[in-house]
Amino acid sequence: MAWDTESAHEAALGALRLAQRFPTSLRLLRAVCGYKHPVLEVDLAGLRFANPIGLAAGFDKNGVAVEALTALGFGHIEVGTVTPWPQPGQSRPRLFRLAEDRALINRMGFPSRGMETVARRVVQMRRGPMIVGVNVGANATSVQQGTALDDYVAVLRRLAPLADYVTLNVSSPNTPLLRDLQGPEALAALLDASLAVLANAKPLFVKIAPDLSSQELDDLLQVVMGRKMAGIVATNTTTARPEGLRGRHRNESGGLSGAPLRDRSTAMIRAIHAQTQGHLPIIGVGGVFSWEDALEKLLAGASLVQLYTGLVYRGPLIARSINRGLAAFAEREGIGRLQAIVGQGNG
Image 1: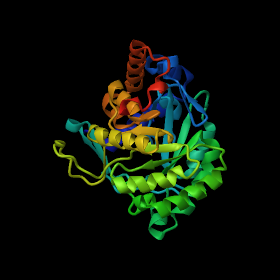
Image 2: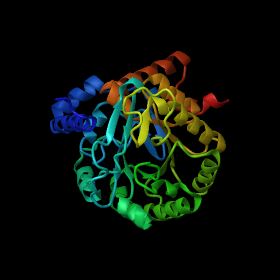
Image 3: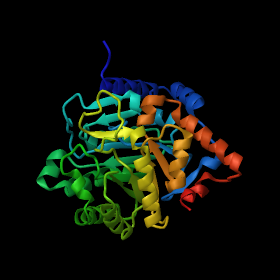
Image 4: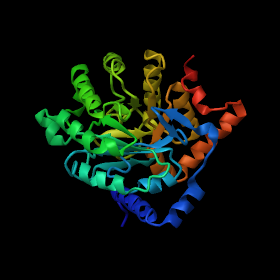
């Protein structure tokens, strides 16, 4: 009997979790999937990333396979979204493949084992050169009750000391009312409380939706630029359904990711880079399957690029393939450090 999409994902994550128990397995993964080149290194927010390609939040929600995922060649892994208390998320089925569109639709709703479980796992990691970010969110009941801010603060206090950076997820479409936190007043309060907890000890990013209007984006950027933020993650999944989707699950509710999101995500990156004159670092997410897709995000203004759906469709060699392609491009163009081209496509 064929597995549903979420069961297949869980099986893959379980295999990676098993592999990381054995140093020999990790060495083999690094040898097959890893790729290093000095031109790929990125300095951002006081951290040095071995390459610009990271794994977006959502793939490893509870931090069960970070070491193995790093061995697949990613320059950073973003764990989460993590909530203070365990919650099951939405009922299954809640994750759907649109293979014809190279896309996914999810309405997961922050299924999380909770911050204490994730904290124990992060502590147990054999960190080495890994860069691990934690994507934090609020329990659904807290959002409904208007106490989401307290949840973000709780997770930050518990996990920020253990992470290399943290990201506030205020843009998932699958927790009702969560996206309201992107409004200027609510976002300002959340950022101020979060920055007070961090006290400049760890870089803080905020992840935004691709569905913001131009005015909403302007308002959001004014809030972000007025504070000591490390940057912005653009973007989360979209509630829009572009014309031409062919997958039989195209009408399922939830957030759409993958190839149909690519252009919208890149347009958001370009707009943010232009409006902030390149002063606000961007982690670009959305529809990255190839080195050309990643290059497009870099040229639009992203300093780092994350993917998720691309890994689902292209498999464990995707980070190696993209990094090799980017390094070859840099060598052909005589670029000493790929970081130098960030935003250069917006001239």
